[in-house]
Length: 342
Image (tube, rainbow, N blue to C red):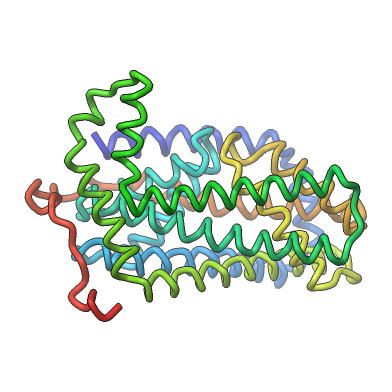
């Protein structure tokens, strides 16, 4: 059943990929690529692969503390790209991509795979919100902007910070059971999730165990995600330079990237169409970036995202059934042998 879900998702994403290519106007994409030298194209693609490499290393740090099952780095890397493809091409956005990641971790028990994905995503959000807040602080100090824009940026940052704080707190106490109990209070019942209640309790226990016993891997993973954001900044800066905007400063690229992070956080529309573009346009105006360069950078970054999402379809289409995991194994949370020293 799990393999069928992934295969169906892959074919759905393939159809959406063709649709996005047609919608993006292939002629316009070719003209954009024509502005770049072969070196620039290869360097930007290389940075994207480094970006996914960092994400995979971070996830591996977490998974090693959630499960004793050994999973190859390549398996995790392809699962990351498959999750990106699912999140990019479908309305499920980030949530659907994370579900696909957990599904592709054979032979890791489902509760351990799910726990690792939830923790990894939480650490990513904490690091991302921190960098976004730093960018906002510097912008408010150095740049004059209308009061309305100040309120919008401050409100979004505050809301995301509150959300992360509550999510982190609930995870330490039992996120999934809290969700089930909340649904019960609202008189919303799901037989499927009620049947999985014991497994969800075990998942909550694995998550809580990680936060209480593995602080060093948490810190390492957090640092990697901060590095990942700085890699976004480098890509943004190089994109401006390669497209001919030589006056752009590294600080401006940092501020544009961190303020634009909100466009990648909101999981509503496939590929972030509309939200992504509209979020960046006022930011370009704040930093006096000419519209032609701003739109060109948006198109270039969208093209890179599309390229990596297309690669992410490959492991989904080629996925083979994994060996089943015995229920007894799935019911036991595993900590690494060096857990006490982490």
